Length: 160
Image (cartoon, rainbow, N blue to C red; front, top):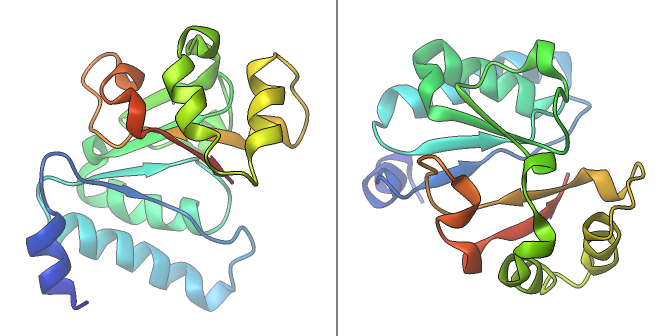
C-alpha cells in the first residue's frame, strides 16, 4: 500500500495508529523514525497515534508526531507516572485507573490472544510483575473522556 492510499483509507476520526517497535534502535534509524512520525502527522488530519511510551522506536516516532501536533498523540501506561519525563502526549491513560474486574467484556475479548491469556489473568487478579505489567489496553476508537468505554468489545491486549 502506498502512502497516499493509506492516508485516503485511514485518515478518519475513528482511526488510531498503534506505535510498536524495537527498544534497541540503531542510531542511524532514530532520525528516520522521527521523520516518519512527522510525515504521518503532517500529511494526515484526523488519525490519532497511540503509544505505550516505550524507549526506542516509540520514543523517536512520538517525537516526530508531537513536533507537528501533540494533541494527536495518546499514551497508554501500565501505571501512573510510567516514564512520565519522556511522555510528550496530550492525553495519557493509566491502566491503574481502569477497573478491569468491572470490564468483563474487555477481559473476555482480550483473552482471545492466547499468548497473552496468562498475563491478562495475572494483571486482572492484581498480580503485578515485570511481565504482567507490560500488558496494555488499546481501544479502537478515539477516546473522548472515558476512553475504555467507547468500544469495549474491540479492545485488545498488546504485549509491549
